[in-house]
Image (cartoon, rainbow, N blue to C red):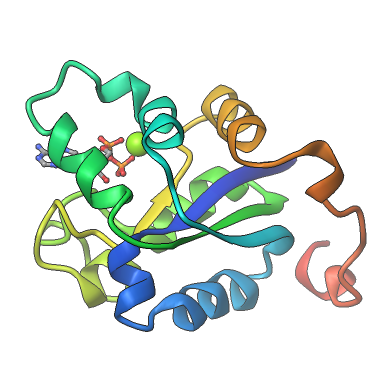
Length: 150
Ligand code: DAT
Ligand code: MG
């Protein structure tokens, strides 16, 4: 079943020059880029995005981090895209993330974990709506799709 997910390269990933690597992993996995933009995240957008974590002790640090520099925001589509991207990302805490995952290859600290990916279909819908206008989401087929899916 094809689905869409919201993906973000966080400010640490942008500053460390990891945007291309993250996108390459997503593309070569066979997932489709539906939308892509750089965003200077303001406080309102950051708080809306992380609203579910508002009461957590790390909330203020999380907002400070995510507003500390540009991010790259994406909508990614494909079969089980949510699970596929979460798998590419690895565990939330990079120390627990397997080598071969983005966080396992590039992270050491839970507060600098390079990438965000939506965790469920409803969250994905909310996050895509929060970050993108409907007109920014492209509708096209990858020419290699018959070679990616039976
Ligand atoms: P994920 O990003 O894997 O979906 P999450 O939604 O639980 O993880 O948390 C959102 C972000 O908040 C996470 O990427 C990093 C930060 N975070 C989570 N738990 C944390 C903790 N215990 N201490 C510091 N930061 C934390
Ligand atoms: Mg999450």
